[in-house]
Figure 1 (cartoon, rainbow, N blue to C red):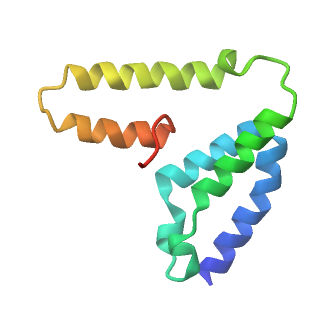
Figure 2 (cartoon, rainbow, N blue to C red):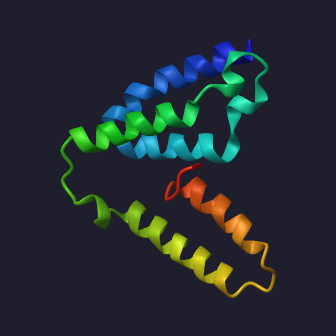
Length: 115
């Protein structure tokens, strides 16, 4: 039952993510940090939820016209500032295992793929 409910939520959010890319970014972060598909036991457990959300968001951001350039949007400035701070803090960390955690954060931010 969880699978069907989560699939319905994801299917309903895809058009919204396409039409309003900033909502798609929020949805993608929710999927990335919470991993709601890992709370299911059926077909949704290994379903590429983040890929669907990211694809709809990127397609909407690229195909729909924006009034402001993407890199000057407040969300992007905050995201890039946080990434710089995460990297600086990792560079001055006392434990070398911090780079493993940094890699997880960079993957969650979307600046590095899993490969």
